[in-house]
Amino acid sequence: MHGVKLFAPASIANISCGFDVLGLCLENIGDIMEIRRSEKAGIHITSIKGQVLPLEANKNVAGVAGLALLEAHNPQLGFEIKIEKKIKPGSGIGSSAASAAGTVAGINYLLGNPFSPSELIPFAMEGERLACGSAHADNVAPALLGGFTLVRDTNPLDVCKLPTPLELAATVIHPKIEVKTSDARAVLKQRVSLEKAIKQWANVGALVSSLYEEDYALLSRALVDEIVEPSRAILIPHFAKIKDACKAAGALGSGISGSGPSVFALSRGMTNANKVAQAMQEVYKDTDIPFEIHVSPIKQSGVSILEILK
Amino acid sequence: MHGVKLFAPASIANISCGFDVLGLCLENIGDIMEIRRSEKAGIHITSIKGQVLPLEANKNVAGVAGLALLEAHNPQLGFEIKIEKKIKPGSGIGSSAASAAGTVAGINYLLGNPFSPSELIPFAMEGERLACGSAHADNVAPALLGGFTLVRDTNPLDVCKLPTPLELAATVIHPKIEVKTSDARAVLKQRVSLEKAIKQWANVGALVSSLYEEDYALLSRALVDEIVEPSRAILIPHFAKIKDACKAAGALGSGISGSGPSVFALSRGMTNANKVAQAMQEVYKDTDIPFEIHVSPIKQSGVSILEILK
Image (cartoon, rainbow over all chains, first blue to last red; front, side):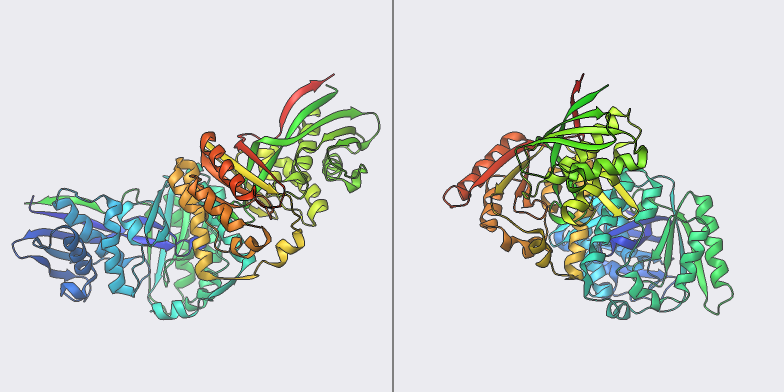
């Protein structure tokens, strides 16, 4: 097997009460990558379409993740990578995670799967370290494992794959403004009230239970974040209006995707998710902020191999 | 049907990371109650064995809970209650909750179950309001529903029953000292670090997942409380030693039961739970503090009807 073409999915991290812990994988939004064996040791990014990003492996998220895998497996091996970036960097739906996850999943596949999907997470996290300064797993975990994931700990890494009710669908609006990660971090309060923290962990527990029970009503009640969302909402124009519109359109809940600026909503069924998309569009269409809206089922598995390349 | 004899189970609230949210029901520890129809409207507590507690219905947890149920159902009805208190009040394993839960479950049974077990919780919570000043559900929920319970919210009440792995067993040591609820509250820090709060809700999510997956190793990793336990540990003599002894004896985890002074440990299997009991005993036997140790499976259902009384 010489090469693979694959789909590297976008993902939503945080998910209301699950700040820094929960993530989910998207079916319809993601990058296309081609990964081929190379005679030359190391990672060689030969083309990136759709975005201007560095080709040097050690400056590129995909490169760094791939090199971390090779370092652990066999540094003598070489791979060539072509990336068609469809996820906008900085949109808050795991653009860097998709590149990192796609790379390590593709290389792993070409090597005959020496690593399980969970074992690939630490390599992909190295890509995240390059992208945002910390090796977090909120997006790479769902991008590699699919469905809902819970990162219990990163040191040592402890990730649970959670069940994902089949009818669940996501709507994501990406307002094309820049939210700097440093700003998104700066607005966080480093101390929180015990009372609100208790509510948050009650909601996380209920949310996890709702996924196992396929209890959409409970999921809806648990999709609340009184800790981080109130602080970060100010960074996203018309955030409160979008939330109200999502609710009125029948969404189970909504919140900030990752550290923004994208806002996600979860709905029961694609029909509802499309209604929510219309409602989001109504809020933004008369503003001067360009935007994009995605509607997607939750992807039950992570990175997908699309084609074997001869 | 004239009367019932029932078993009103003890319970463990909080359960490490699940402070104010999680609870579980014990199989081997609980009160025995007899509840009979009475010609006289209201609740009439005719005898309490094992403890000195007020017989006046409006000053007694069982009385208040029973009156709350009658108020909602039919205030013209009357019931007579005999209580054999086996759970020590103030021990931290839901003594008042057992009385409240037993009363409302028994009356409900005699009335032909007009209320579901979940619908009984608010009545039993009124008993808790009398006992500790706030109508919390941490103990009455597991005492009525059995197994593990998660209280997502109390206003409006939103309780999830969680699955309980069959092999799970609890060991509880009750050091016979008084920990005033006011002291247990006073030592709580009203603000907590975001970082620790995130760890806590990651652990709650993982703990809930572990119950569904019957993943004892994950349960063990999630049985951590870095927020409340460090503050309250000072109220319980030799707390750190007990924790270390439990761990060395193979417990999955341990922590403060409710607001103490009892300390619980969870183990896989009764054999291990008994080993943990021995280890706890080793810590306490040379101190001058009297103590009691209980070992119990987790009770899968709440209050049990033992006998129909003619």
